[in-house]
Image (cartoon, rainbow, N blue to C red; front, side, top):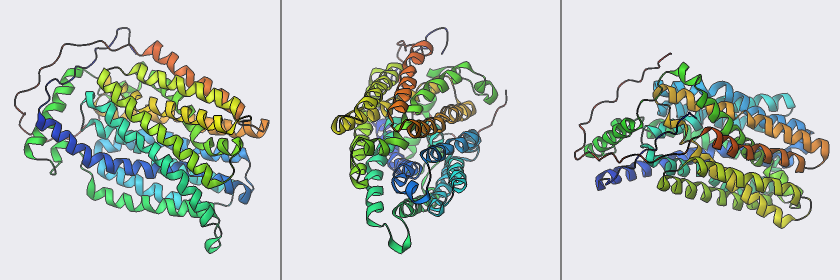
Length: 463
């Protein structure tokens, strides 16, 4: 990322008990709620993979139509993610996340009325537009509440919700499709969109009353806790040293584009596994939607455990680059192996798919430690959103290519091998561009908390 290695941040030695208690309170207040929203978001984004098991036959859609529709979500995501994150920086997380959640829920419900490829494409595109900004917005939001040495674990906890969504969403979609098929004259796949979209609409309304934008405004913390957290965040900002705050300068920073290339490789694999996971399991020999749901549930449970444990170990060791690159390589190897196993062994295919999901997902939360080491303020809002939005264009390309190749060859194996090669390249890019962390002298902890001061109004700077 630079010609010289960046200095790793020192841990905050001798953390006061009160400060630990404050962060525990923040975690219990924010993380369960944000994880719940991410579960709803993930389910509403990827339920198309389960609906596909019935939807394609009912609507006479080809595999290519499905692949384009699944992936076109990310074009809307790409176009609107940076503006959404800049809006969050300007008006706050509470209103931004509430708007996002309500609209994606409404769009999910509307999916039940799709009858043509054009309508399918339009609603998937709009779902991307509406959901744009949620994921990078939460990443940015959490940087307002936690210092650097605590973030990988927190990111891992938050992002593990996508694995929990897989644990919950697979059996739920399978049960709805088998149990509700034909009720009220609607197909099972239509009930999936209806039942899974309504909770997001309600959650958007709850968000307006529940979230707090910044620690200085958190009335649910004591005065002492607020002061301690504000002082600790100021200590962390000082330890990081000068970082880019200007939006346009951050977008021209080569390190941002290096991060985009790395994350693009990881997202390629994650999207392929997400949108074609049910199809891979079915091609391996499991045909019942509920059985497919339970198989993927177990795989995503392992993925969630990997995210949390890898993030925890990264925080404790102070090392991020290999904690991102090595799991990505493991995921790539498992995907390549899966391409060989699908035609020959159902049981071994499930094992390889589980390892692929766990490896790929474990790389993601640690990756987000990297941009925060050189971006701050409005530049972080724009940079994080740009990294996520451009890299997620892989989410359009991977499903579209997988659908085309499956239709062309009659098998998912060729697509899996290409995806594995792309993900494996992530480690090459990390070793080339991300310098290893080097230890720095410890920064002594402040003996007394700094007085509480109101957070300044954010300004959006222009280079």
